Image (cartoon, rainbow over all chains, first blue to last red; front, top):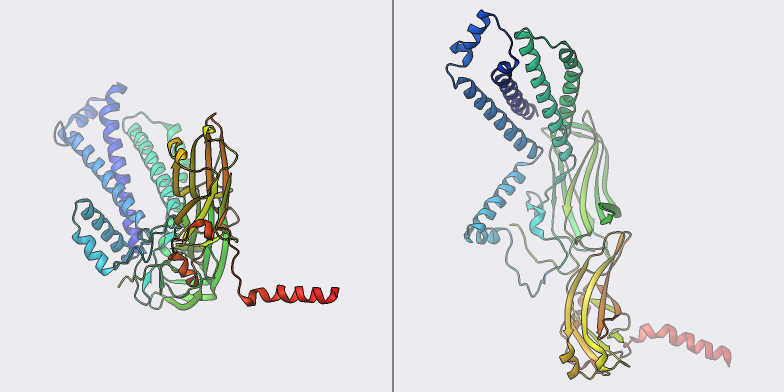
Length: 361
Length: 165
């Protein structure tokens, strides 16, 4: 956790430093000459000296380019780190492998696809197991081989987009503050004080600190709660089928309760005027496990293996343009000092007797 | 215009063969322009409609001239594995056989016969391999019920006769 925060602080620092230096360069080179201040001889000498110019005519612009590079690398690093915040190693490697496979298939190399099909998805007879129109494809589920059970499900963590939002707000506002600070400092330096702007810097700085705190809080919320691993004995599921489930919660937490639920949701999209709206309805919610007072330790993650039966006569997964029926496993908990968390693991439910007998092994 | 399916309960297992018939009566050939037959699913409910056509056949004027219109014509297709018929809270999935008749004066007449696409049952496997029996022979034939299924109605009928006598 400290490592992640340190990394994020480093990237943020790079961006802010770059913005500050760039603002100073722009202010001193582009704006000061237009102001037309009658500078004292000594000050003019200092400003026109090689040291101030950055060692030559182009020195100032070298500093500007370096600061732009610093901003760019900070933004890239911060974006990459936020994008993969809370991802497990397995998920990262699976996504990398998929990206490599896609690149290879685009390049026309079938060897990688053959290799992966041998190891992950054995061939099956399409006559025996026909296509399933409107049932989402299994490839999109991002599953991987499990350690205890056959499949490890990939999670869709909630609240990731809000982290991006707060990161953008914190970054934008802090950059703005630093630019204004550069203007205020330059004003003092060149005997052109801007007292109103200096006074305004106080509330601006308060907002900047607040936005940074919100961002860090959300980072803690996403990254602070340890990884959740869910493995299942078979996938895709079939109505009426019996399945084993293994759930492991890592991190260092004291949970008031931890709950595992099987949820089937209907989602409909409809147009209202020029807006597209959506509506959700939980068609089925089955509580598989609820445990109170759960202690999770870095040396001993909370683990539970249970079995459950998918009810018969339930709808299979369905995805059309405007209507969706989706299944998922929800692992949620209320923890201290972290806020409550909820992690979603999408499942695929096929119509009965239509699943190909494949295995990731 | 008449569309009918071969099973009384209108339930077909996924992956099995659908046999149905359509007939147009009391319409002159000159009044017709074309006929479209489709086996489709569509959604109904709060969301905007989704529609998927599984089987489609179009008869133009030249095709219609060769068809005896008053006779029953066969629709035959293997049903897909999904989506199954569904009655949910926000959405329903309906399967239908739709016959759309385009008249020469520009009007359109639509007739629909709903049916259910249900879970594939192992005991219904024999439906997957259907012999090429002419539709007329199979169409609307009364479903054979087992003796156990018939027993309650037979007993109640006998009781009714006894009480009357």
